[in-house]
Image 1 (spheres, rainbow, N blue to C red):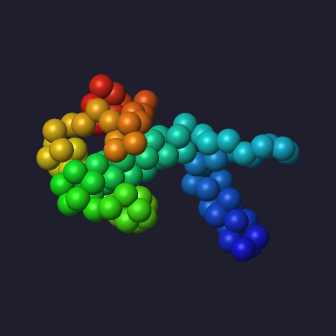
Image 2: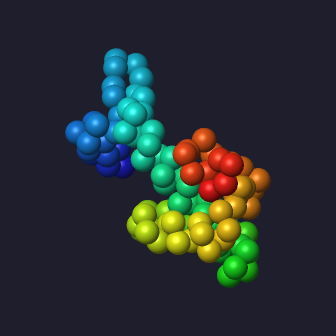
Length: 104
């Protein structure tokens, strides 16, 4: 497992998603933008699963975790439009990404 963490860290450094100093790792601007995109896809997936497909809360989160990594930009935008550009995820959270305030 430690090797997996080292490989993931090395990959994130090489992709310029994180920067590292002696005692801390931080997201770069690119890393922050990617994180916001993933969070947005996760929250839209949760909204779709809960409100349209009526999936239980326990199943909703685990499925949204899978979907957040496979939804492309066009599908994400289509889901957002289909849902009426919701302002909040099922947990009542918003996000500071460019498309989530005032609506996803």
